Image (cartoon, rainbow, N blue to C red; front, side, top):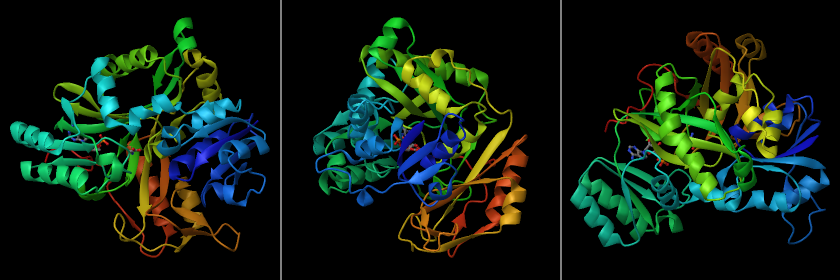
Length: 446
Ligand code: AMP
Ligand code: GLY
């Protein structure tokens, strides 16, 4: 079977690597892919710009999928999901892993997702939505700080301000609603109660359609809990980034916490997806704050997390492609999930200057014997194939790659991951040295 994967990040490299391991897979067509998928076994990168067979007005992804004889599609990022790419694949008779447009709005609109959480009793922080600037400011003054200001729409990770003071919160409202700092995403704001705690990411497989709801097969199956490290510097300091590294599973998350998560967040979400009659066959990401009053949901993402995927998928001791088939055909409930017993640590290497301006086009070099000895797997994010075609790759983004290693203990995984990192060099490379260590997680304290 041929499968099309949409996206170009580290998450997509990981998905492609995992899909390619399946004996039923002949070819993974990655659109557009990156410098990692370019060299991955069974994978081929396709850039729509180079496909003269795509007719005007035709959806380029669907055209490529048809041309390449793909019988399954997997969509990585949120933007194409929010725009309805899953609907397009289904219309063309290509089964697609990723929710249809209506369900994808759970990530694309904070207001809609908060309404959904409240309607179905999902444990979450109190909030109110505003389209009027003065009313938003009044609410902030009444409630005081700390308080959280969120743009309603997709804002590439820039739409949330956790304000320590009322002044900061008012400034955030001014920036988003008044000055258009996040564009149309800031026309509506959600103002939310600030929660203190530690964050975790729970990624999960979802198989919900109205038909599966009737047959009793609608389900959400969570993966092992993971954690992203969003701040740039060691000790959870410095500016927010797209993620400086991830670990899975988490020693500080007990079975009791996961049971509470299931009861207060996952099951009400499942009930909601069913009631809304969504066609949601794909992945969901629960951004959860563990508070003294139990787990509370901060957000849904309608996709796998990045860089969490780079730490979670390598622990899967089952065929990822078969799981995707089970998601699609309503047999996920009976699918046998088996996990490796150890730990995965995945620090990220970024370009010097990131998350501000950075240079691109730096050649990445690998000390192959050292990298092989570490047993770490490199998942490429912001890097492209070089011109020589001998495996050379050049940086092209802020987050360049993740170096993900397995260990039977956390310590072993950590040491192997950082041994791997020490084998990789590029001009200006920067990474956090404390991914997964005590004090590395954000505590949520302002
Ligand atoms: P979101 O996109 O809603 O997950 O927000 C981005 C980040 O802002 C989260 O990962 C948290 O670190 C922080 N955050 C969001 N909502 C809250 C909240 N209610 N209380 C404290 N921190 C929050
Ligand atoms: N790691 C956070 C995200 O994928 O949104």
